[in-house]
Figure: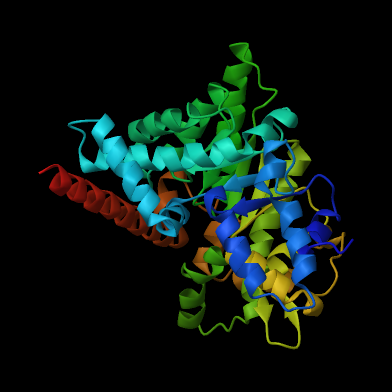
Length: 403
């Protein structure tokens, strides 16, 4: 059997997991398009590999190569755009069932429906694995990353959709308060919009407090899970790392930028392992570097051998498959390779890196002002507004039909 690149990665540590970073609703469409672009000699192999990763029929029987699913507002927008006629109808139905609801409420109900449909597709996997696999992450509205009450209310609505719904909460000070409260109620969480060691420490502390409360209340936590997302390439490329280096006359190579991203991830990972914390680090925002002759994806290769979740968007998976013959083999000892001390000293000249790498690099009230957080939250908010406008247009069309 020819293993998929991601299956080879998981083979370096059987406790690691690969998740699908998009709505399950788009997988079949993406799969057909990917196979349509496959080299003739590989099409049959790719077909078998992708069917092992996710096949709705096998998922309905409790089997799935992907360990779980993550979504976010841009990805949910893609799911709607993937079948706009269907979602136009759904929005009209939701609006008809909720007379008097404004556009924002209908938007949120539509988002809940996309999350519910995705969770239903993997629910048999969740049950078959006794809650260890098959979670689908649904995210609270990214326009309100500092609104504790709104995030908590939305998190509870998401959690009520299905037992395998994992709630994504941003890495703001208020977000960690929400994570504590949800954990105290036995609800699984995914800490998103998170980039830095101080955020990960805050998340672990919030989860620990929540677990203490849940245990004191006698809750069943056998199916509870927590993951902490490291948005790797966003840390190095959408924040202030490059600008601060340039302003100080410091040259950073592309490899050194990845070194910085991975040093932060590994510091949090090893701290969690050393302390026995139950949260699992989740790696996202990965890149494939391919010049046609050689290729690498250090965002996964440098973590090989680790007990890590890798959540992979469709485009990234396709890039890995296209570059497979040029990728070096995975080294199961990569997770334990220490970052170069000289490079860390060089990077620590930059305030941005110190904020990300030092355990006390930021206070919680600074998290939402960190450049990568602010940029990503703005991007997610823009995607949310586009979805709200899609809903508004569907409602306008419904009103015109009624008139």
